[in-house]
Image (tube, rainbow, N blue to C red):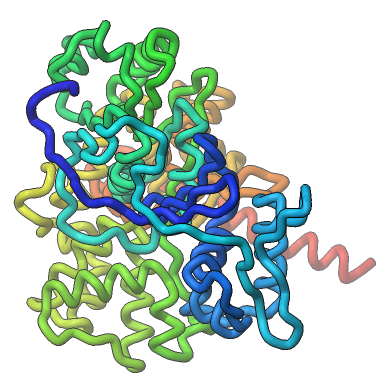
Amino acid sequence: MFGMNNHNDTSQGSVLRFGPYAFHVRQRLVLEGEQPLRMGGRAMDILQVLLEHAGEVVSKEQLIARVWPTSIVEEINLRVHIAALRRALGDGTNGQRYIIHVAQCGYSFVAPVEQGTSDALHMPAAALTPLHNLPARLTPVSGRDALIGSLVRQMPVCRLMTITGAPGVGKTTVALRVAELLLQYFRDGAWWVDLAMLEDDKPLLDHLLHALNTDFFTLSGRHALLVLDNCDHRRDSCATLVETLLHAAPRLSILVTGREALHIPQEAVHYVPLLAIPKRSTLNSVEEAMGYPAVQLFVNRARARQQGFSLRQQDLSGVREICRQLDGLPLAIELAAAQIDALGLIGLQAQVENGLQLLGQGRRTAEPRHQSMAAAIDWSFQYLTEMEQRVLLRLSVFSTGFTLEAALSVISSVDLAGSRLSAIIEGLARKSLLIQEPNRATARYWMLNTVRRYARDRFERSDDRLELQQRHARYFSHTRNASRRTLLAQAVE
């Protein structure tokens, strides 16, 4: 036990045993002995359904309805995941069969299954009452099931994992949910340390030991998960601390959150994506729209704010536009949905384009940086270097994506040119304040709407605003004319 401020969690998730395997339902974890099995989230869902109906034939339609409740999928998808599940279990090797196909009917789990509780993690009795200091979650986590399930399966075999992403994307939410689900795996529990408010001059190790009410010798012997949250402003110190802990504490696993990876050996980096938003062409029904995480989150938070709120067919276009304007950022969507009772859906859609002012009425009990989108971005902005801040503000002149060539032509100056400017732009992408479009021959970047509005509000007060706007207009006028000349030349040929 690290300290006395523990909140005992006595809930015991069920465990389904078969052959050498134990499926811990609450943790969505399959162990062979003490070794986690690698399998995809859909395969895990299929396994759970088949285990729940062991000895029975489950039709293909039933499986598809349970595993893909909000999507329309072909039977081939089911067959692919069944095949992956069989490979993961070694189905058919050494004469052991688990899943059989019953022609024209479906699939059946044919091995004996025993049900118990998660004390089967082969840990001491302390695992029944996990130790932790994780903050209580006030709302459910929306739209992150696949990501969280993947991280939960990887964490036991990965000693260092860093979760990165844009301001407001939910890095802390994901990390804490992963820690919750792994409480019973780690004998000595899961421990959260928020570094956001740590003074710059305080030694990081001292802060960590004080927060956990322990000493270094005790910590080094624990089988525990350590969550180091918000490492951005002390990233170098955090990297040094993590390397020290990994070397000195062989049974300690560390989960880090920040805008940028630590860039040290053993680190597995996972980027938290924006919540998926439906395309206009997919707004055919409320059920289809609710299959998208951004819409789910908006509706869930709106219902919590306004009793009787329900999503109607005529609301789909407006809700989609709100989510699109807010980039699919969970924090921004939550802050907007909190205004539904005051503004109504039509008023909210009209106001959401006005900038970040609307997104400044968050929960008073939340951390200051989570009470508004401006505060969330400002917390990241203040830890940039002066040059990085200057470049980010200047890049807000682009209303859409841009290439490095465009940035060099439009925002460069005597002290911001060539390789120096390129390096700063690449660094802003690593810090999740710019998004780099993947799979392109020419690097192309874009800025989230929320970040651009923040940067543009500050940029409007700068002395070089008019000059950069003129350079931007000249560059794109020249680009359009050059494209026309190329098309004309090709037509003549």
